[in-house]
Length: 263
Image (cartoon, rainbow, N blue to C red):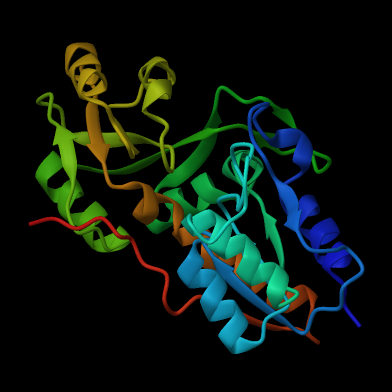
């Protein structure tokens, strides 16, 4: 019988804990390592709706990108969404594992999946943080190339490829060819994209002043949304889990969606 601990060990071969940011919270955040697992629900977020879906489906484990618990909790009550989620998992004996910034940085992780979804070729890690056990460079951002094209064409491609409701962007009068990507809130790394010689950067959660910074630096900057830029990795996670644990049923959440809409 497969256990939570065995699945955690496997996930940490894909995204080693040593690759996480110092401030992050990853790994087993609810449940027990010795608990048996026959069903895994995979989702980007461990929000209350995902926890309800896991309970209704009979899953013993949820595997997510974002952590169930990020900031220290002073109380776990039914007065907050996180409190209700934790109580629901505990009541149904469901464990929760996440791989967050370690999966962002890992080879084959969030940003490689984002680059693949956008069709980038000749991929490289921007400002590598180190080399993994297989000799592969790892780090936060990726860069690659696309066929030289107007920004308007690339915007249409990004929106379709990531199924975005909408995009925010700054255009600096350059065509798109060398593209940097950073799933989620990576706009603070835009100087790395500039220094790598990129003309375009796709990320999310861009602040007002960061758009101006990109404008002044001559970098096309595209905010494609947090959920759309990170969600491509979920398909990979589910596939890896299913392949390595054939006695376990693995399913991607059917209810979890981006809550952000455009009017």
